[in-house]
Every structure is written in C-alpha cells, then in structure tokens.
Length: 218
Ligand SMILES: O=P(O)(O)OC[C@H]1O[C@H](O[C@H]2O[C@H](CO)[C@@H](O)[C@H](O)[C@H]2O)[C@H](O)[C@@H](O)[C@@H]1O
Image (cartoon, rainbow, N blue to C red; front, side):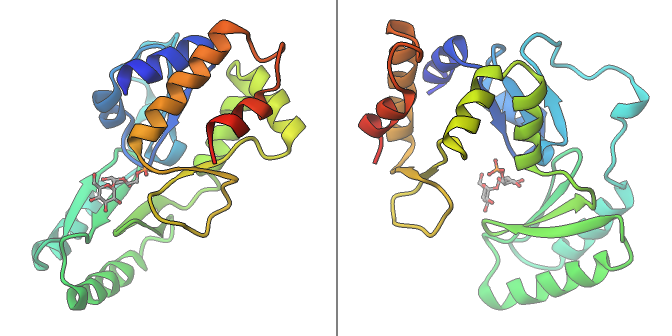
C-alpha cells in the first residue's frame, strides 16, 4: 500500500487527512512526498516542509493536559475504555467497552466536558472525539489544501464536477454522501495503482478523469 500511495503522490498532489495525530499517521505511512493533516485537519505539513515541529509559540498544544488527566481518570474506572492523545484533540475509545458501560462512559465524559466550553464532542467509529470548539474540520482542511497548497488541478477538477469524486470504503452497503465505493484496502490499493499508472501514461488532459473513475470503481 505504501508503494501505491508513493506512486499516486508522484503524479498527483496527495494528502492524508485524519483524526489521529500527524506524527502517528506519518509513522504508519512514512512517505515524504505527500501532505499530512492530523488532529482532524488542525495540524498540516507539506511535502516540502520539514516534518518535525519547531519550537514555535503557535505550535503549542491546544489540548489542556487537565482534560486529558480528567478523561483518563474516568476511563480508568470503566473496563475497556481508553484515552488516546491526538496532539490537538483527544479520543475516548469505547470499542472494547460492554454495551451498558458505553452509556455510563458517554454520560460521564459529556458531563465532565460541560465545564470546558472551548471544546466539543463529536462521535466517530466507537470513539468520542474531544476537539477544540473551532470552525475547522477535515473538510475545511481539504478546502484549505486545495485552495492554497498547490492542488490547483484538483480545484479545477472539483469545480468542474461539483463535488470531486468522493469514495467510501466499505464491504457492506452504507448510507453516505460518497458517489463511489471500494470494498476494502486491497481494492483501494489497486485503485491507487491504476490512477497513478493512468496519469503516468497519458495525463488527465488527454482523456477524461471522470471516465477513468467510472471504469475503475463502482
Ligand atoms: O479520521 P480517521 O483517520 O478515520 O481517525 C479516526 C479515529 O481513528 C482511530 O480510531 C479508529 O480506529 C481504531 C483502531 O485503530 C478503532 O479502535 C476505533 O474504534 C476507530 O474509531 C484513532 O485511534 C482515533 O484516535 C481517531 O480519532
């Protein structure tokens, strides 16, 4: 998969946008030719900029250590629950918590977070995301990348099509906004290899990217 992403990054500006910390995503992916946006898009690096943090004031952590300690205390009392530090946001995982305790955990976290108006809670896949209460998310991070960091071709593409080419990855049918779907990581990998090869061979100006998408995915 890494080699497939590297190939795509060679032919298209490529970004990985995640709720996880940027460092963690980089540890998984370990490629220098792509953009990374961690902490739900709050922490962005470009391929040309050193990945490592400098000692700059604006890079100080926004997550109050007090909140982390408080959430760790809550999860300690509930079997299977755990807190993950995503640098500019926190996750409270409940995948391994039994059903009855999930309700208890959610109530405790929601109640404790009531005193922290600068933070909000959103829910992911068996995870509560504790995020700064700012108007920023993965979608806005994508828009920022498209508008400012050398994704000019994508801007054109997204404008032309209206919504780009959203693809959901799921082995079962799902209600989503995505226009296309792939079943699993294996299909994702062959899709990535195909678009990189397609761009290498002919470039999207010579043939329709839309047509290519239609051929490659459902
Ligand atoms: O934005 P994403 O890249 O989709 O990140 C969202 C969360 O991903 C991780 O949690 C998810 O994967 C875990 C297994 O690795 C799973 O246990 C959990 O239920 C999933 O939600 C990550 O650990 C979280 O911090 C992210 O917020």
